[in-house]
Image (cartoon, rainbow, N blue to C red):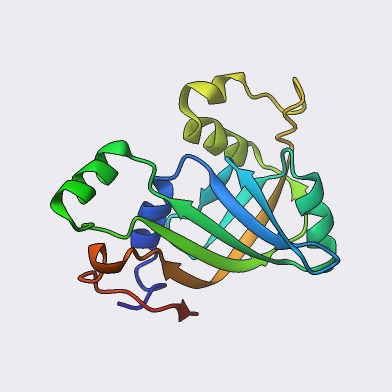
Length: 166
């Protein structure tokens, strides 16, 4: 399977995650991981965007290096329980997406609405610039690499096991 010919598969794996771990590099070369709950993946293309909320160190890191690696793990308790009991996963339990982050820009109304919908009930409390939740700005991410999360024998039967680049 070519990963970007089947973007919907990777998008579906990632969409099971409640929060995403964004890894960037500090100016001194050390790693920095930021939890992000506002990642929205494009339904057709290997790209997405996130709202720049509570990302001060990550934002500084992206000034000198626009690369990011995102880890998304399927947080469904039923998925994990079913997989452990059957001793195999029927889909990758997660995915690592690597890419380049674009410049900060003002979010469109459609993007703000998509974030609110993705957050469900919590999304009703988000307003641009209100209550410390500045959902005014977004940054796009263009993915060029995908690698499924593997867990030994539990995922050995799955068809994709190697890192693939676009």
